[in-house]
Length: 593
Image (cartoon, rainbow, N blue to C red):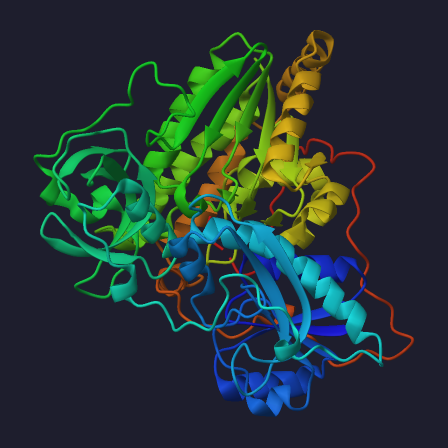
C-alpha cells in the first residue's frame, strides 16, 4: 500500500514507523506539515492510498481529509481529546493510558475510530520517555491494524460515540503554564511529576537565583532540610534545589526572559552560581540510589557495566571527557567483559549543538567537542583488555550512531532506530571512516552516508552495523544483555576475542590516528570555513525551525506495474579488508556529529 506519513517533524516515532512499514512491504513516504498549502500540494503530488499522522501538531486541511483517508494516531485512550494528552496524564498520575487511531474530521480528535491500544503508566515518567516507549509501541500496533483494515473494502471505522470511553479520558484544553505551576515548598514528588510532564517542551516556568527560567530534566535529590527554592549544590551541569520535603536536581534550563535555547543548568546560570558549592558524588552510594549521576560503573563477577545517560543523547565536551575517564577506570579493572550501555531514551546523538551554539565561539566549542568524542571512540577501538559490548538501548544518530561501532559486539534493543550518517553541514568524524567500512563493507558504508535514511535494528543486523538484537521491553532487554555479557565472559571466548582484536590492530598498516587526522581536516573546513552551511544548520536545529521535506523522504508518483523495488542492503559475507590507505567516505551533504 502507498502510505504517506504526514508529520510535524520526522521524529523517533515517525522514523520507527517508516522503517517498520517499509520492511512490511509498503511504499512509504514522508511529508512535513510546514503549512496548509504545502500539505495540500504534497498530498496531491504523492497520491497516497492512506495518510497516517503519527506526530502531527497542525490541523489537517479539509481538502486533504475529505479526499484521502487520513488517520491520526492520538496519544490518548478512547474519549481523550486535546493537544496536551500526555501532559495531563503524567500530571494527574493516570494509572493507565493509550493510543487511539482515529479518522481526521473537521473537529480535532473527534473522528471515527480505526484502532486503539492501552497500557499501564510508569511511575512519574518523563514525557519523552513515555512517548518513545509505551506510546510508540502502541502507535505502531495501531498503525498495522489500520493498514490491515484499510485493505478491506468493507471496513468502516466505528463512531467515537459508540466506543466505551476509557476511565479518566475526556476532552481537555491545552495545558498552560498556570496549570503546570508549582511552588518550591511543594513535595518533591509533585514537582518532579509537573516538570516531567512538560519535559522536552514547553518546560515549567519558575524562578531560580533571581532569574525566570523554564525547567527540564528533573531528578529527585538526597538533600533534606533545605529551604525551598534555594540552590544547594551543583554537579556535572546540574543544580540541586530545595523543595518542601527534600530536593531535586535540575539538569537543563531555558531563559524565559528572551528567546533562547535549552542548556545545562550551570551553563545558563553561570555567575549566579559563584557561591554554590560543587557536590562530588556521595562515597559508597549504590548506583541505583536516587542521586544525580550521568555515568555509573558497577561490576558483577567477570563483567563490568559502564552506563551513561545524557539528556536527549547530546554529548558536550565535558560529557565526553567524563565518559572517557570512566571508561579508562573500567578498563583498568580485572574483568573480561565491559558493557558500555547508553540510556533507554537515547544511546547518543553526537555532539551537543545547543552548547556549541550558546558558546562565545561556537566553532571552537564544536571543534573541542568533536575532539573529545573522538577520544572516547579511539579508546573503545583500542581496548584489548576486555571484550567490549556496546549496548544501544535507545536511538542513536550521526556521531552517536558511530560511537559504538568500534566495539567487539554491538547489541541493540529491538525497535531502536539508527541514523548512521551526517546531515548538519558536517563531514563527520568519530573515526567512522575506520569503523563503518569494517562493519558493513566500503560500498554499503558509502551508501549509508549518501542515503541519509533511518535504519531499523533488523536492517542494521542484516548490514552488520549490529551484531545482536535483544527484546524491546527494557527489563527483558536488560536480562537478555546480562546473558549475552556472561556468554562473552567465558574465559576461552573472551581470550580468543581479545587476542584476535590485538592481532588485527597490530596488522593495521595505517595508524588509527591517520583516520582521525583526515576526518578532522575535512571537519575543519566545515566548522571553521563553514563550507557546507554548518552554522545555519546548527542555528535552525537548536531553534527547531520548520524545514521542507527532504526529497529522499518524499513518496514519489506511483511506479509502473513492471517496476522493481529498490534492492535492500545486505550484510557482506566477509568484512572489508584492512585498507592500505584509509577509505575516504564522501559526505553527501556534509545530523549533528
